[in-house]
Length: 555
Image (cartoon, rainbow, N blue to C red; front, side, top):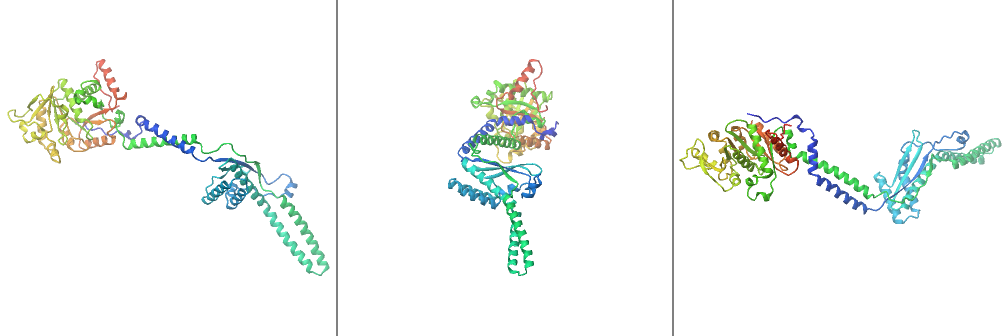
């Protein structure tokens, strides 16, 4: 017996055809979602209050001049380490200074209050948007600092940038004067001490010495006053702030484009993730990793074409051609065996296994093959409904007594096996219907009886093909109980609905039960060019005189 082929090692690799096929199926969603998100973002951005940004530049210079005279007469602050300017600008003392300067400006009070509150809140959160620093420095920390300020109006942005630079320069100059100021204060203390001692001493010689010392201190104090006045920091203004002409935000077009792209990426990722977790079989390319042949692709029949039933609808058009290919592929696969027996099942109800069984039986009968259809789906029998009300008559099955009252259903046959009769429903086609639907475990016990194989062997002697319509494989174990007595199972898969994972589970169940799966029939496929590639390919082969065979999952 042919065994189910193992799943290929590359089944979990990414198949670009499947990826593009998934994106093509969800193309409307992938197009609509970014458009909706982009449109909503544009509307929301357009309603936001404008934000203006102004910037001013300062330069960090080397405090060590090349002229010794300048170095001896000028006091400068030491260079600032990396990141110091940003830390100072965002310090509590400098923020308070900037707020004081804003309150003295000519800006409207409500804007001043809003900017002051934002600066205080950003200081507490240690996250700054109103005032930012961008540095472009060399390895010796020399270069340009750009102070960027944001405001509700162009003038507010300019004023905040100016006040920020002014506060920063004041701090830098105060830093340069610190050492000189301390020296001046020390000299002032010495002067006061010497003056007090001179006033208290009576010795002329010692008094003269103290007066000379006080004169030297006065001279040093005078020099300190000059140095303190000339002391300068390492930061110098370069470019003053100007009022901007257009806001930096919101930018509706940019925001809409970014939101649309983000929505597209997220939607694509979710679609691919959902498809990988619950990927549905939409075409033969989805079944390639399973390593099984696709025996036929049956198109989806419109409801109005089913008014007379499924079988009349299969007598013409693409469905007729597809059933023909299925018949030829089944005959080619089973070869010259006698009394061939096939189980036809699906993963879940509603995938079209019963209709496909009847159509295949009718096609085989029209080709001169004697066919017996057994409706083994005892819980939900549908073969009588598919074949319609026309009945040609009944006759005894091989190995039974024609003189006995007929047992015309599977259920009755197990009660009176010697009186089993089949109903002629078409040319060369007999049907053994299931009978009254069974609920509970009774239906499964009938098919699990060892006598069923004996009956099947006996009945098959009078037919070329025995087609057994069994319950879905994932719902009931009946298919796995019947299939070992046959040549194999044909699995019907509904295109666009059946999940690939469910097909894999069905095949895994068959593999565990040592049941042969001959191939897959894709049913209810939407009418696309890919769906009928097999039809066109087979027609070309037929014109050349070769047997048309559908492309299979074997590559």
